[in-house]
Image (cartoon, rainbow, N blue to C red; front, top):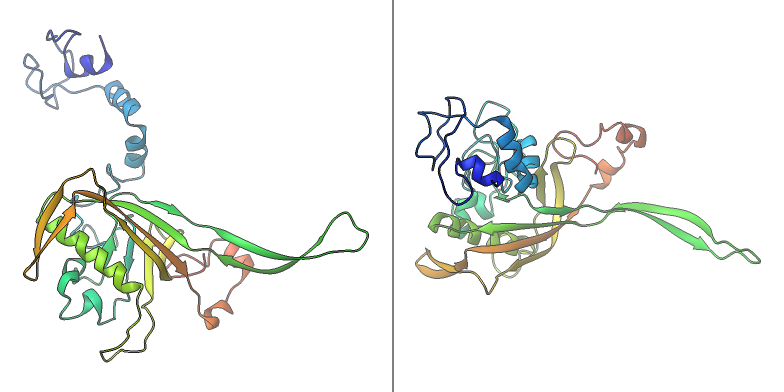
Length: 290
């Protein structure tokens, strides 16, 4: 008998067996089961052997795909806008300043409307756990010493390289199709300056903020977007959606990748203290030093 056969109450070959579980949860597919048999803990462990990554996500309070376990599995749910006061949402979010009046915060936000929640916690939420790469660099110059086997190294400075985020977006209905297009236009716009027409003409691309995984990883880190790409596969279906009277087709599954460069103002940089940084006290809260 295989593990999955025994879990569903069938012997190998499809013959139904008589379950011997407790009486709490119903097991679909077991016709001769008691009113409410309960799976023992060993069965859950057996299932986790087939999906260890999902087991790890469950321990971290995430559902499969990285959706928050504290609320409905929907990309249209506002970031940290549900549950008890102060409840944390571990999902990765990229947003503009809450007090801004452009893009999705504008009274005429157009295609970006799905990104606005009205709670002050709007922006693009990655619905599935994305892949993130953070690189810290220390630069050293060299001096070629005469008659020496080794160069001399002199410290020049440190920097944080661009944070690369790559995540999947799935589309199963019209609302998700509109959300995907809103995210695409948001990242497109964040890589462009105000130029030509408009009252903000001459301003550079906007500052964005990266949130995710709590106070000591990405707590509202100020960044600029230096790169954005959207991969449209050729082996998936495309769903049609109507936006502002126009028809658009979007893939049922695609990948969005962005590179965010953390930035620190000159005034804030002077407040850096390495001892406090090493104690983990210069990052928690809104913003801080990576």
